Length: 73
Image (cartoon, rainbow, N blue to C red; front, side, top):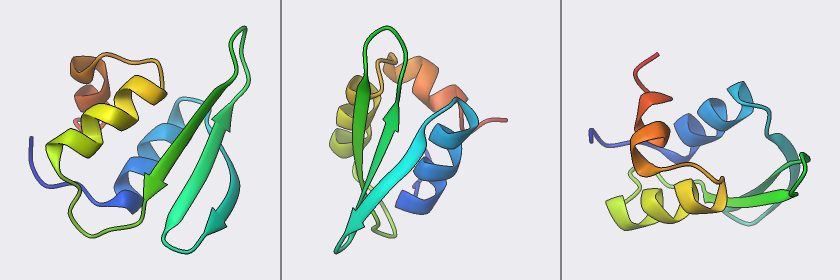
């Protein structure tokens, strides 16, 4: 996957219903209230490593493949 910034991740997650909760330092907390409440923490770094992106996708309840598709649109 091409390098992705924290801001790009936040933009993609807000497209699928996540909302900003708060920011503490360089980390942003997003939430999505559905049947199961989802909380995602996104670091605001320029380039996020693949391991961090995998972690964010799990927190969001998405497979990594579904998560990557958010950036192709």
